[in-house]
Each structure stands twice: as C-alpha cells, then as structure tokens.
Image 1: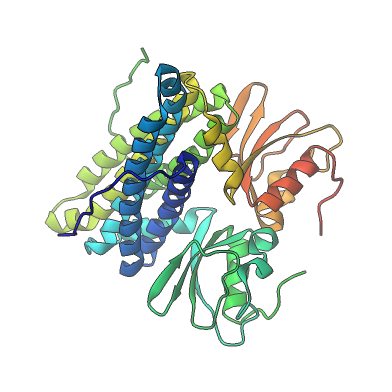
Image 2: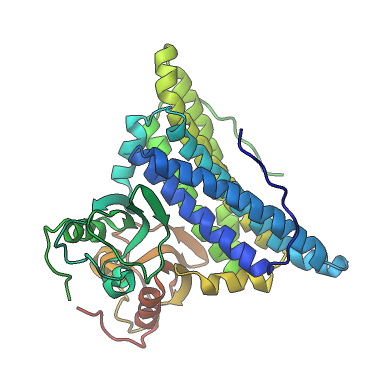
Length: 202
Length: 202
C-alpha cells in the first residue's frame, strides 16, 4: 500500500496550479501511449506517479478556489476554472488507466500497436549514438520543433526517465529519447540521433 | 432533448473502431481548448457531437469484443484493447466538459486564457486572406508539419467547421483555420495565411 500524505492548504496561485495540471495531463497521454507501445514498465510507473501528482494539484486548486471565492459572483466567475481543472484530472486518470495495462502485465494487444502505425502524429523511440550530430547539444540549439516538427517528450538516462525536458537540457550518447511529431520529422530525427544522418538540414 | 438512436451491432473491425476513438479523443482536447480560448460556441457544439460519436463507437467496440472473445484466453488478450478504448472515452468526456463551459455560457475565466499564453504548444486562429501564399493550395502541398511543425486541426468555411481536414483539402480565402504547433511555427503560418509573409521558406 502506498503511503498517503495529508494534503495541507498552502497558497499557490490558481493559474500556476491549472497550468501544471493542463501540461501534465497532456504529457501523460503521450507518455502512457508510449509506455504501452514500447511496453516500458518504468515509464508506465512514472505516469502513475504523475497521476498522483495531478490529484494533489486538484485538491490544492479546489482549496485555493474556495478561499478565493468570497461571494456568488466570484463563484460564477471561478466555476469555469474549476471545470477545466476537473477535466485535466479526468484526462490524467485516463492516461493512468492506459499505463496500468503495462504495470499490471495485461499485455499490449497487437491492435493497440497497429493503430499507432496508422496515425499521422506518431511516437518514436531513438537512442543517441556516440558521434551523433545531436550528442552534447542543448535541446534549444537543436530547435527541433521549428526545424522538423519534433518534440522530445522524455529522456531516459541512467535508468531514470526525465519527463518533458527543459530547452536547456543536453542530450548525451546512450540517452533514449521518446519523440512526438509528424512521421517525416521523427524519422529524420531518429536517423540523426542514431548517426545515420550526420547533419541537420539548413 | 436530443433524440437517441438505438445502437445496433454491426461488424466493424476492432482496430478501425479503436483508431477512430483514439484520434477523435485527442483531436477533441485541442478543439475543446480552442473553443474555450476563442469562446467559439459552434466549435464547442461540434465537440459535444464528437463526444456522442465516441460514445457510439465505444458501444460498437464493446459489442465487437464480446463477439470476438470465445474463451478466457481471448478475454485476457482483449482486455487491454477494452481498457484503451475506455480511456479514450474518458478523454472525450473531459473534452466535452470543457466544451460545455462555452455552450452553457459559463464564461472563460481570464486565467484559462492566460495559461494558454504560457504553454509551449499553442493553439492559434488565422484567417486566410485574398492573395495569401497558401490560398487555393492543398494541405499536403503546404507540408506544414514538416516545414514548420504546424498542424491544421479545423477549418471554418461557410459557418461550418471541418474538423481534422484531409491532406487533400484545399484552403480558400475567408477560411478560418485553427492550428496547433510550436509558437514560432504557428506565428509564421499565421503571417503566411494573413498575407504578411508572401512565401514559404525553403
């Protein structure tokens, strides 16, 4: 049984809580599908941890809204915020359901794998090789989103997953990267990371 | 009250049902956030219609799985598919909750708008102007995903929204486009669509 900590009210701006809930829940969907697609238990466990983080944020946000609303007009104005927060929580629950398929060894049916082959936006795993054109570079220097429509959503290094890495993060040989993007872009990026392509197109 | 049709079993491949559920639910999140961000009631209503479509797909998929599973081994193998389907249904419900903020005139709190300004992946609305470099072109010819990491998720033409347009779709002057992508890419695309930039970068 996990140990549950008491969640105490501490003042955190509502916008900060909602922003983290939104970003985390969207990232979780990609990560959960990646965990299922690559049958990666550690990544699936990270998704379950994020789900528990989103739950905590949801409690904090609900408390913050209660404190902020002093009259019925405030309540009317804040109900939209509360609804969006609840929706991000629902999305994160759905991602956790998908991740649990992996952690519970239910097994990913070939159909689940197949549907990813058919979608335009795909998730792909690439390993950074020694001498790769991207090794040692900061993500912002690679400018992947603008150049090839690719987003690195997770980096596995020394058995840990680094989720939604900062733009100042560097990639190193041995890193396993999960990328999201259009097929042409992520294929090109995989070739770069694995050394089959030696330079970024200008 | 909406009119509910009886959902009758008809054989549709499970992979086809699951693929449509997955793609629709992911698209719905972007559309629901767009509807909230741009306070667009028609778009929000389209999201609610998609939600009802996903519900129908969920029923059909459940029936299909029941018919397909002939023994306990089949059931074990298919439970993962059923779980992924249920998760996409949950995601589509969450999107509908967000859309309902708009259709019920709850009003989008400034905080909800603000959090979109801070996220890396942004949603943007652009109107195609006469003489724009993209007017009359097919989406596949524009190759937006590879060129600038931009995806057109909806086109509004003659008061109707065309959701998740095909690559063979053309854009015309007067079309309102909702795009998703990295900030640099969607800004460049908006400039192109609205005629402030006259040609696609090579």
